[in-house]
Length: 52
Image (cartoon, rainbow, N blue to C red; front, side, top):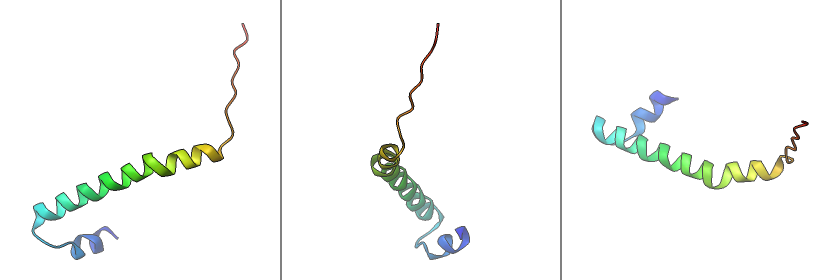
């Protein structure tokens, strides 16, 4: 999988690394912005009480 991704990216090694970093940042941004809040809304609230 990673080898195939590496082969289809254009340019020299430093350009490929830069593209992969930008892609990783974009995926993390999408996860934090849309996916994690959506999953959180599907999960029930966790009620915890502490008895003294």
